[in-house]
Length: 155
Image (tube, rainbow, N blue to C red; front, side):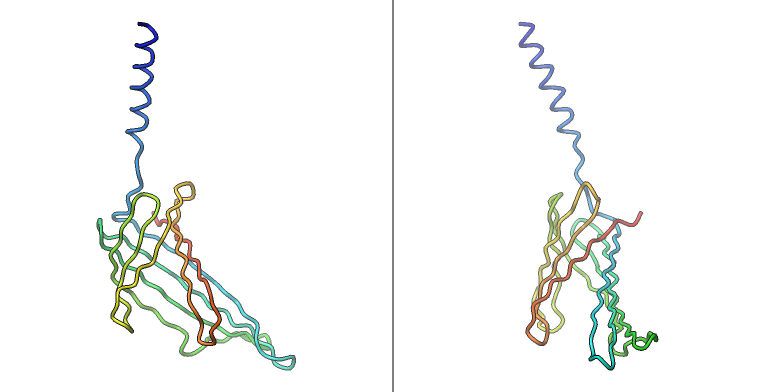
């Protein structure tokens, strides 16, 4: 009898801890990320370094709506001088819908060029409190690329 009561008591205590487990909600949270890439180009006589910076802001408005702002800027450094690259400085905001199960989610928006829905998966890292988005694509010259953005929550 004592053993049965002890097992029942232990089960109740375990259920309390399991049921109190709080899952992350994204509603009303804001996140920021920055990716900086550099690429050397040119020849032996004229070498330059191209630096591209992408700043991302992700806002979860309610249980299904979000928005993302991406700002891209680029500079070229040549002969010790750094100058902005015209035509490579852009900023845009897009409205999204999202799903999230506490660990993984998807962001869905409409591709402005094709008018078709585009879904981007993301993962939430509970330990670091970060959201990671990995996007793959193909450059104009046919080379594949992957861009990873790690978003940190803005408190």
